[in-house]
Amino acid sequence: QRGDASGALGWLQRSLATHERRGKLNTGEAGKVYKDFGVAYRKLGDLDNAAAFLDQALASFDSAGASLGPEVACVLRKLSAVLIEKGDFPLALEKLTLARRVHEQAGTIKCKGALSVLKYSADVLHEMGDHEAALAALDLAWE
View 1 (spheres, rainbow, N blue to C red):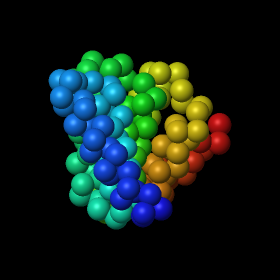
View 2 (view 1 turned 45 degrees about the vertical axis):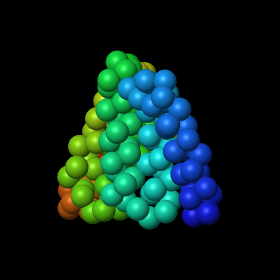
View 3 (view 1 turned 90 degrees about the vertical axis):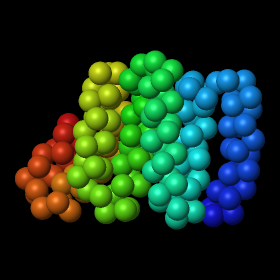
């Protein structure tokens, strides 16, 4: 996987340069490229760059006026996974809570991504010592 991720970085860099030349860095498409950068850096174990690119993806979607939908929730979920790996549980929980709200607003609360949000939330709450809230998050996932 690490080899695939490092090879992907070159392709993503060229894609980002194309968006930059076209003046389209603040678009949903650029947001997807930033998201892919974040995923590749996470696979390489570079959590700081992963978090930075995932934050940039969110900013790009926001600048583009993208509606809060599953794509934004996906980036929030991926960012929370990076934050969990970094041990920043409070910020991870904040991003997961936002991802859950996005899924609720988009009507996608029963999709696989939303279930992952609830599972990650339970993991974080457990790590933070709030076992009752962790169980409540798992109960929601089972509904």
